[in-house]
Length: 350
Image (tube, rainbow, N blue to C red):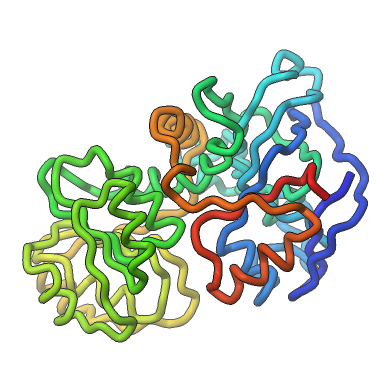
């Protein structure tokens, strides 16, 4: 099969690879689409950070060149002895593999499993013609959702998990700082919220998409906007803030914007140290939550059901590229911040 294999920083090769082995509890998926995200672009342009190119991953046991791709959908074409009944089924994979037995898994927080690993980041993934995945990470795609729509299920599930983590009540004013990919999916997950949702970004085009996805109000701010600027732009009290941009200084703005006793949910990943006025946060009793990935058993089915009723590719700009063009038309523009909307790779198109 052909696959996109990461060998090192800015070294992603589309090449022939052996077809993956299907274990007893696995399914073999012929990939229809694999979505690219900022994490993929970061691994390509600045990594390796999560991909175990040099040190063996404790959860997956994988080390060395790695087939990327953790947002994939397709059709089951083969299966292990325990999963034969799934052959022929269209599925979306959550990509996060958990043990099912540790204390976090027993609590239902499989995304925090002590042996957690992610297909396409810590083991071979779906940027390929075929991928083997544990059957319990794969959810059947409803008849009402096309493969292209289902290709958005995994990142939408991340947005839905973020909303599930936050303590939102009816009538709350919710602000989403940064409505790029994940921020857009958070807006989608909030579309039935009984209260105002305010999308904040530096890009008017992103804000227009956010409005179509369900945001009641949009606020365009310059990159150097201060907390005071945000408060002036959103004069109402903000009960819950999602920080989804991950840019430097955004967390400080999120805590400064939220009302006394409100809540900030940190979603965006920024791996540089961030200044925070902790005394202000303490004195105003601001609550903070963080969120990572999703819970496959609940969030992926919910995302697929939403996509069946509310097709996102009609609103969120979605572009399909060939596997052979994944670096030129995918990784490079994503790395430069020049890509808008969602990019799906069709591995059947070399």
